[in-house]
Image (cartoon, rainbow, N blue to C red; front, side, top):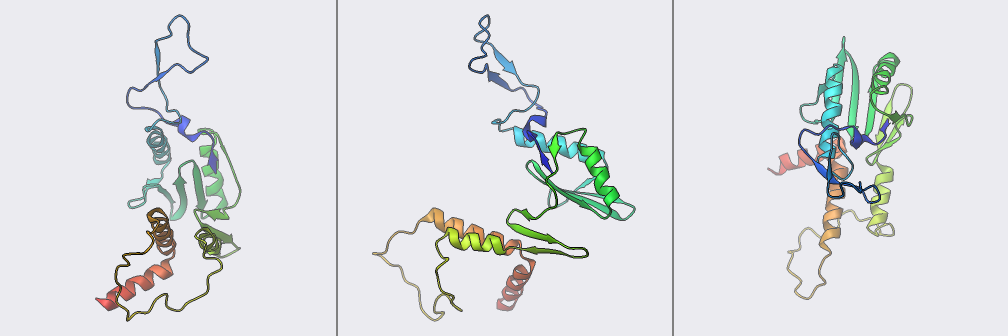
Amino acid sequence: MDVKSAFLNGYLNEEVYVEQPKGLVDPSFPNHVYRLKKALYGLKQAPRAWYERLTQFLVNQGHMKGGTDKTLFVKDDNERLMIAQIYVDDIVFGGMSDKMVQHFIQQMQPKFEMSLVGELTYFLGLQVKQMENTIFILQSKYVKNLVKKFGMDNGGHKRTPAATHLKLTKDENGVAVDQNMYKSMIGSLLYLTASRPDITEVKRILKYINN
């Protein structure tokens, strides 16, 4: 579900003024400004105002905000769950029955202008394959794009990237490393491990063994 012009739905809790747009300046009051009642794109308050508006609406409809993930909303209807995950103006949702899903859509559509984009197949680097009784989540596309992005698609496979017995020393005459690219690499790999429970669990076990 994609909410159209999401940031225009947020209400402002403070006074915000903007200049008159070019081409629409009132000739009688050229130095006047407008006071905003609702958020506009470009305002630093806009994302927060949209999130607060959507949160209030979902809570009023019986959803509970997640304790750790504040963008996750869960509704428990007699032990039947309806889940909605918010990512800016995109909403990924699902329920334990078609009736719950349709009811959620009927609640949202009169309140916000939106479009349904169909069954979830790709979200934040995660590929989703939905079958009759099973859902597979994989990241092969994310990994391939990651390798290509950093120019390692033609590299060979190594069991160990470097010898473990060598002592590292500073290369005084070496070429400086691109810090932005290095940080981007590390961040991308951290996201890969954080979104893979199997890899994360192995890291936790190895850390426990080493300690």
